[in-house]
Image (cartoon, rainbow, N blue to C red; front, side, top):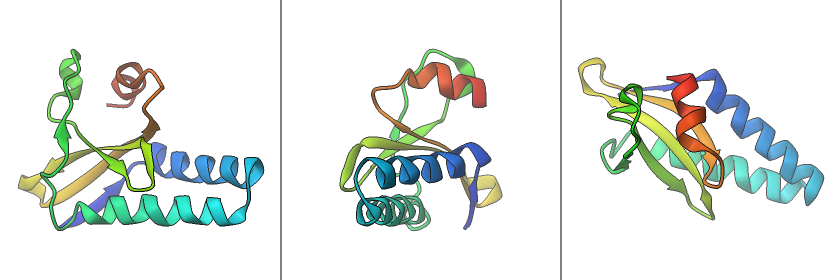
Length: 107
């Protein structure tokens, strides 16, 4: 199984780590990065464990999500692409954001 991470998702991880570093400390930023990495890599062994999203936009059909352990308000949005034997990490977002609008612009 191949893991693909969109540029938007990679940027989200780095930006959140920078936020934690500034708002709290380096330890929290490092804990965030480790937790996000574990969540993303966990999908390689169980790709269909995420919940299917129920957005209205047709471009988001088949999109799934999981929470990041220890950061339960942050969600990993991804697509399982069995024909390509791949997982595509579309975005990582805080649940309080306008998820459908942001994701629809990226898909």
